[in-house]
Image 1 (tube, rainbow, N blue to C red):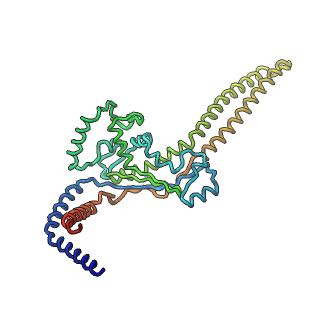
Image 2: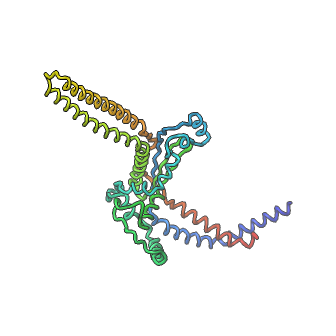
Image 3: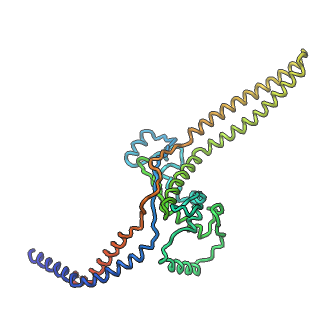
Length: 350
């Protein structure tokens, strides 16, 4: 046992001594790595992160105490026992929907320096900063793909209103994928708190789009929750307007008949008056019933409209979230040091 420890100590000392004797090689490779890493990472565009947190109101849950017990273990059964087909756990999937992303294209954004005000679609398509060092590689890859891939004959959209989520050009599709990659949505299964995060090269655009994502999600859920009730309101409103016209016509006919036969005592005239009076009463009852139903449906619409509590609002980030330039350079130095050390001592560790 003592001989093994001694042999191990001697080997370790030999390795350290061998690395120390080759320290000049490390100096050279460190300098080269530091310079090349800086050349690569410094032109990389900075990006910023902004997030918002909101707690959606859930309706139609029938789980009761079972739902509360399940939430304490990290599960949510609200979508299974409730009336809503889109519950908070499915919100992240909405952010992968082309219709949802295309709905963001018309949002007006302004850069922090105030030099650019345009739509988000135009901003992402024409005003993104790129690393100039990688431009030759991108052009080469674009040329290579042009020879390999078939030409896409789908017309390219020139404006946000011309993008068809059903049939997009390859460039429009790649732009949509880039936007999807810049957006993330997560839901806490215990509390159903929704966290929306956005990445962008401009801090003001980042905060603006984060807030727009929140409002876009709220509008989508509100439209989904209230679509059927809104149709009911429109239906009862249409019926009320139609019956109101019939009631006005019946009222005018009854009034005109009574004015024309004020002193007439013949039974057939009184019967006709009673008939018009009954028709007027029926129209009035129908109108009253429909108006009552219309008011009840409007109340139901208000109850169906969900409320969202904003726990954390979007703010303009002060510091960039990346790229981590110092960490990148340090990581590259550690990597080349590890590789070079292995190449030097590989014969001694066999």
